[in-house]
Length: 319
Length: 224
Image 1 (cartoon, rainbow over the protein chains, first blue to last red):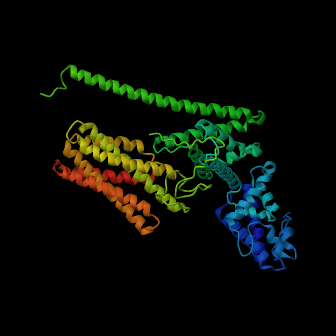
Image 2: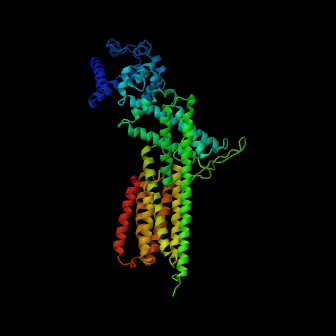
Image 3: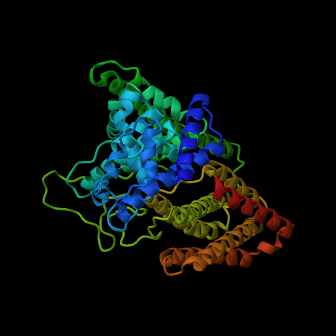
């Protein structure tokens, strides 16, 4: 028990060090992770085993200077009620760590307008769930985890909505849209999800551009663009697959940039910009088709001329 | 080749609902095999396992690239030998390859499989190989056919082996399809041999080079 407390204190100190320097060594991270995971699992364990004596470590968390009141709900004499408050835990089912992380990050999103995309927001989110703010140690990537979680959540929401619309069209209860209109609506829908966080979004974008976040953010972006094109009806299996997705990625990213510095009412300028970009892409596609058709016609003309020439000079005849 | 699918247009308020024919019911969530009208079965079994999905997608990607390349090879051969006696022979084999390619296009579209980035390369390389081998005459074209079809058959066989090792029942439709295609390719291989493929000068060397190229192409297409 005492060892656990010492570990917690050590973990907190290390975290403090980490935030000052901005760099946390892997060992510190592992220590933090190990101790905080152990702490949270103990939380889950004790509330389920029904012990009426909470482990002393939780008493000592407030005395060590932590201002969290999160331990209060767990200290009551009827531990059975405490775990009923936490959704996802009932009976013998344990919540997985990923589920817990998802819950913490989702509740942390409320505090983003106040604290920005930072570990403080995660800590505040954890506290609303009745957990110690030290549970931010679970998130190795800190603010990056929060931003990536938000992006994944938005993309999932978008995919769900598009799938529902797709089903309605297939069942004949709705009309299908033109490609350009569909793309416009999908991108607008996705960007509107940023509106509650638009003031702090530049910070989130810069977090997504950090080298260690780039693989994940690119993965989210490419999945989202693939989803949009799939529901727009794209079934191409040649280079069009790549060019279409590249075009939509460009449209999405530039529109996002316009949006963060747009101050017009309801972001009208952003939607106008989006309209124009989509028109550009459609024009380019049409031009490309025209060029190809012209090229083919030209080749046929040249072949015809060559054959005529061969006929005139008598080269075509068999002797 | 551009393929665009517009979902059924229906008058709003119409009482008719169009449901897919016997087979998979329409699901709201995104599955590996979405609801497609008229298709009563799916060649790729739906799966939630990421690794399995990646493996299946890789297989379909490389097979699609292979059929695309084979198509271009026959196109190249036809471009050179189109006015000779071998025309009907090449045309028949080419038509079968076109059928294979359209089947793979269907699978890629339905299952949201990414096509390989190297398709333009296979386009040019395939046509060049076909045309180049046809310049050596009918025997050269047949030799090229024999070499390529042997490589492709070997590749399909290894895929069949992999799937059989994993779970023959789960992949029944997929195995059936690959076996059918492999049999077609073996038929082309035998046709090539019948039509004096081996009498081309430098047959062994040509065959070795082409098969090495095919192996490299398969290796790369699985990864890019």
